[in-house]
Length: 409
Ligand code: CMP
Image 1 (cartoon, rainbow, N blue to C red):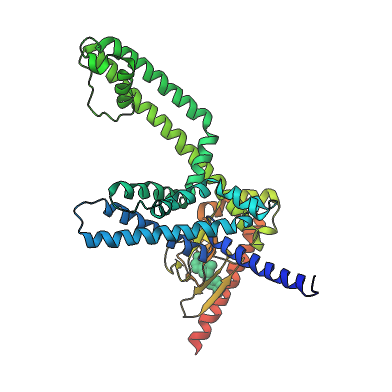
Image 2 (tube, rainbow, N blue to C red):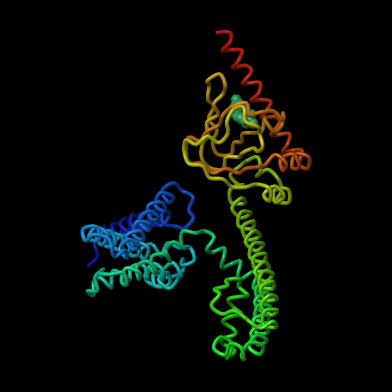
């Protein structure tokens, strides 16, 4: 039998649960710029650090028994923390936008199979070890925690996802460098095997042995456990060392360029996201806007942080996309600026030091435009330059008025 009020009651409960779930999701979402999410990430990092420290210290045999007891307690605590985190993350998985179309159960199952899901599961594996009675007795069990937990650190590195994308984007040059590496390795190993095997049958008697020497030399590691002794072997060794430096430099160059390009692309998207909140920009056409977006940088400031100081040289101006700042004028007055407002333009326009200090009153996300880019944009987009100049003039007049008002009193 169905009561009239039943469905409404059911809906209310679901709505409340969804709201709570989405709120928790917003906090646990990776890279969320919100203050609660930042606080959560800081707590998570501290817990992880405490756990790793406890595991590392537990492996020191000389530590007294009492201390070890404390460390084991810390490891238990950290494991319990990760277990709760894993369960909560499973619960909020249906909030992940990519899993929108899936049922909650399927969304959770899908999340459990993602890299963060698997890392989360691995991090709570020690709990399973404890439950089945292994106990945290010695260095061996402790080191398992160390390996499993250190992986969680990867989830804190925003560059981790970037690294995967860089490797994928740059797979062609990376493959080429690896092929050069393989050619050098095999040629040097074969040559050294032929030249050294009589003098050193143990170290160069087989190709795998010679390849070990070639890898150690080519990567510039140089353990020194195997050393060529014949003149021919030494020449090959010398050439291999020089080639090793060149190959490593090539790989570093490919990865560094890939990282820089990827970071520029990500920053571009972040700026696009923020730019729509600044009315000064939204009035511009898409083509003009895309030119500006490439020159802006996003910056996040916590509350009560000084962004610029009166008297400092002006090298940039700021657009508030989300948050609030306070301009502290020399006469003691203060002006609040919020979403969409800009500041720092006077020093750039007049090429003079900052006329006031500016600090955040709330956690604030801003877009920064450096002086050289500002002058370039101002010369290209007169409408923007005019709007900024007009506001700067209004502020200057207002400040003069305030000043003369306070001197009259
Ligand atoms: P700048 O002088 O570069 O650095 C301090 C900034 O405070 C200044 O640029 C302006 O952007 C801003 N500012 C100064 N006076 C006012 C005002 N009366 N109202 C709002 N902002 C101001």
